[in-house]
Length: 129
Image 1: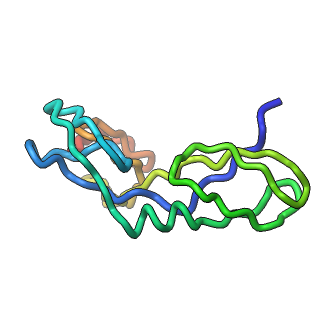
Image 2: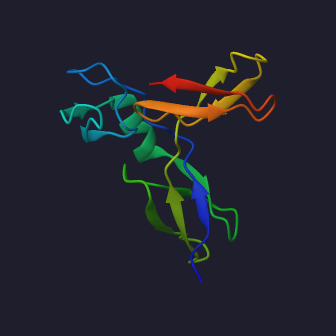
């Protein structure tokens, strides 16, 4: 049986490629642009510090556990009960508006152009990041 998962509360910022200005995949460190292939170094000290110091509740006993690492996903073990769990990445979401019915949609942005279908009015439309 797989260990339970707890989603991180900290998401890396959304940043654009220095070469083509397209959106980079979410993350910190050396990130390759999927649009032009450039390798960009993404650092954000406040996010790095927040990831290192993030505290989450153990899903087994509800004791607070400190992550102590910037890596996500990461395997953690509760010091109180010994239960293991996985701390997963949080993906930033953006809110966009359907051009047909003006409904607000929350999506995980991905680099490039995507076609979406509004769940309210079923109209297809394109978004670019």
